[in-house]
Image 1 (cartoon, rainbow, N blue to C red):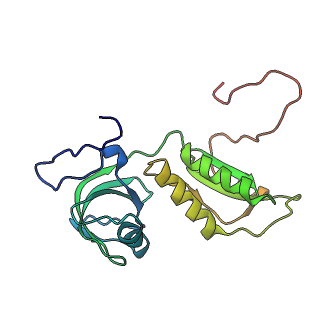
Image 2: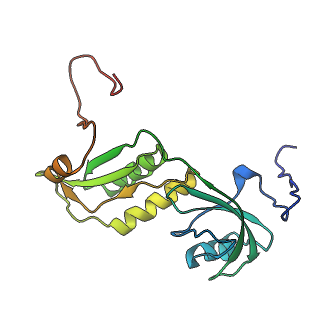
Length: 197
């Protein structure tokens, strides 16, 4: 039936108007191994005030560290929504682990675009970089983390990249252990070679 959502009954929990791929996805900094949880005020507000979800509706939760849980709302409240965990799983970390150091640039929009795409493609760590030509050294890590959370939820992933405070190039090259290190640059001549080669 085009344009309609089907209710799929579950024998052990209330039905939900969402299919598994359409369940609203929320970030919780901590997901303890408990059967019932009180969600954060931010998630609770979005559930009760924005989406107007009610008791019995299903949703997905992640802590950004691989834990993914399906839950059912027991009490929808704008500050303290209470849910029951119905399923829990541990998602493997994306491989290979990729860390990207990117210089701070004046164009905030372009940097935020990079943060979104890095999250969507499974980058494991982002290192804001200060170089000799950096014109803007101020970096709002809290704002960056908010963008990472949004991108993770939008792409329905359970791992969020770690992000550091700004580092110098020397700190990145000498203090970050990695099997391989590459510098991205443009080549005017010569044949392109993929990293895997």
